[in-house]
Image 1: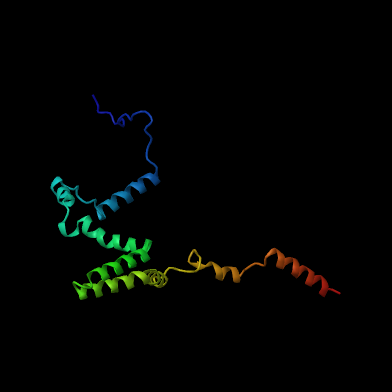
Image 2: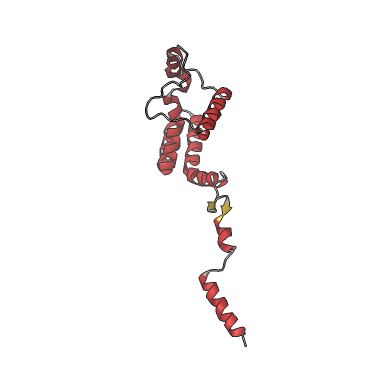
Length: 161
């Protein structure tokens, strides 16, 4: 028997790919060749990630943020408590008393220091939209406002003979 050249039977609902689908698949294959996915993480690597480093434990990291939070929320209470501590240890250790008093002064002026630092951090004071200053757009209009159009209409009417 002669061999048939009939195409293999396609399952129902299968349609040939369009040109766009072929191009998309080609682009995706090329992107995957250029930037392959990283290998999966092994169990040992994941265990190493989970073990905390004693130097960067959450307790050590939270000391600074906790002090900052207390200074932000209630700087006057912190300053008062540091002044009381300074008075209490002034007989035992003058150096520790001076340190506590210095910390109390810093705590007292902390809100002012924070406001100065936040102003200098580069946060824009002007409202921006698409990279443009909105206050600048309000002053420089391309088209006159409806009120300006009415005024111009009256001016034109007066100037006509």
